Each structure stands twice: as C-alpha cells, then as structure tokens.
Amino acid sequence: MAIVTAQRLVTIERHIAEQEHLHPHATGEFSRLLRDLMLAFRLIAREVSRAGLNDILGLTGTTNVYGEAVRKLDAYANEVIIRAMEAGGHLCAMASEESDGLIHLPPGRPRGKYILVFDPLDGSSNIDVNVTIGTIFSIYRRRDPSSTTDGTLEDLLRPGSEQVAAGYVCYGSSVTLVYSTGNGVDVFTYDPTLGEFFLTIEKLRIPQRGKQYSINEGNAKRWAPELQQYIDYLKTPSADGQRPYSLRYVGTAVADVHRVLHYGGIFMYPADRIHPSGKLRLLYEVNPLAFLVEQAGGRASDGFRRILDIAPKELNQRCPVFLGSPEDVAEAEAFLQRRHPWQQYSSGSSEPTVVSV
Ligand code: P6P
Image (cartoon, rainbow, N blue to C red):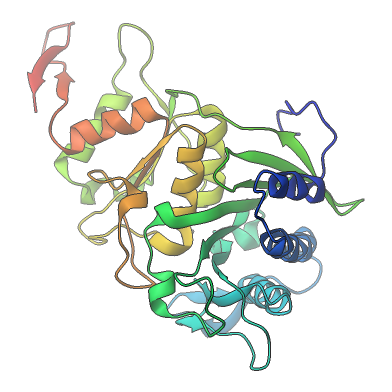
C-alpha cells in the first residue's frame, strides 16, 4: 500500500473540484477533461489487471512509427484514451506515442482549447511478464484559446514549461495516479472495488538527495567517459557512508520515476553512441515526468539544459534524461560538464585523491 500521508478522505472527483476552485475564472472545461481522462485510466487499469486472462497479451503483429512491435494492450490503451477524449469537446488535438502525427477529432465534434499528449502504455516490453507499466500524459492550452478550429503542430511543439497539467498512472502492485496542475504533486491510489481514486499523498516532495541510481548499465560501454566517471563515483564507497548508491532499474520509466519521486536519487536515460539523443521521447515521456519532478522540488535536465526549457522541433524528438533529487542531478551535471572533482583511489593509497576532471 502507498505511504499514506493524506489526512482527508478525498476522491479524484473531489480533488478536481477543489483544484477548480483555486482558479476563480475556471469554466469547468479543464475539470471535465480530467474526468474524461480518469474514465480512460479506469478502463485501462481493468484490462491491465486481467491481462493474463483475456487474451490481451502478446503482439498485434503491427509496428509503430519507430518500427517497434505494438502489443495488444498498447493498442487497447491508445484506443480507449482517444475514444474517451473525443466525446468531451475539450480538446482541439491529441498526439500519442502509438499514433503517427496529430490525432484530429472526428468531424462535427466541438473543438476545445486544450491539447492532450500521451504515451498510452509505457514499458510495453514488461507487459507480458507482469512487471509495472504505466500511462503518461501532458495537457497544454492551445496558443489561441479563442480558436474553434483543429489544433495544429505549432500548438503541440511547445516547451514543457507550458504544460498546464501532467501526470502518470502506474499499474503496479496497486494502481497509482500521480499528477500536477502546477500546484504541487498529488498521489491517488485506485480502489478497483469502488472504481475510485483516493488521495493518499498530498503535495509529495522529493528528498534533496537519495541513495539509489537508475540506469541501464547494459549500455555502459557506450556512455561518454564523463558519465562513466559519474557512475563509478556513485559506486565508490565514501567515508560518510553516503556512497555506494544502490542500482534500481525496472525498465519502465514510470516505475523508475515513481520510485525516485518517493525515495529520491536519480533516474537516467543518457545519450550514448547508439542513441545520440537518448531513447525517451521529449513530448510523450520526458516533459510530463520532468514537470512532475520539478513540481515535487526535484530537478530535470538533459545533462546540460533544463528539460522544460527545450523547444521541441518534432513530435517524436528524443531527449537524454537526468531527473530526480536536486543534489543528485546537479552532481551528475557537474560530472557531465566536467566541473566535478573526480575522486579516485590511486593504486595503493587508502584515501581518495581529488583531481579536477
Ligand atoms: P531500455 C520502455 O520501453 C521505455 O520506453 C521506458 O519506459 C524505459 O525507461 C526505457 O524504455 C527502457 O529502455 O533500453 O533500458 O530497455
């Protein structure tokens, strides 16, 4: 069960209504958009929980825009979100990691002032082996809120700092919704017997520093030397006991980031010789996760720039990721930018010798 700190019995419906009251000029449109999204999450959670029983595991036999095999649950989640969001009339466009280009609303439906960008099921490779997977979403307001036409690519290619909301659902030992509308991060746990998301952690704050790092060490030989030095530094015992860090890596970004948000530390998917811009997609995965981490008091960078300041040039753009506790991410940046005193044990000595890198 999540570490419950909320003192109030609050459902997601009540929470959305409370958030709306914080904005006196709110029309209620944003609240209705969130409610439609919650319906999609309930439907996906139900299928994920039954995945082993209803022939929804396995592959569809198709591939997505990246040439990756699409799994049945991927396709189901994608379809459910699109259908749930089409009806409300709150969006002028959508974009999904599982669909090519902009997703326009059916003709004849009203166009709203919001845009939804989402990864319907993050961690697909883990679906068939019962490892945590997730859904990630971002919401932007269109550039011209008075327009009633279809949203355009320019409405979507925005820096992550312009998100009006972002969040994820973690389908793990319990189903957890973590989201923010820019007023801190709140965590809800799903009760499938009632179909309700209950507030379990209010205004989650990430620890200033952690003791875990999260990265695919299988790629180590392809990393830049500065990154290899940073990871070696984390693994080198320190006199104060702060190091070595422990390695934790699920292979689903939502699960790894969910752990970092609660325990602190750092999640990384860096650039390497094979992935010059890293692997994760800026719009569908990195921006929403970076928004949440910053809202929880953390830091999110590509190693050199604040992620939320990056102006996307295309929908499927990838981005290196270093996010988590502010002290850990700042330390990683110092190594990557060759500003950190690299402590290494010279042969024979028992004390580290500090050399500048
Ligand atoms: P690797 C899942 O497929 C994903 O997109 C992210 O959720 C996850 O962090 C990453 O890829 C894992 O990639 O190369 O370590 O298997």
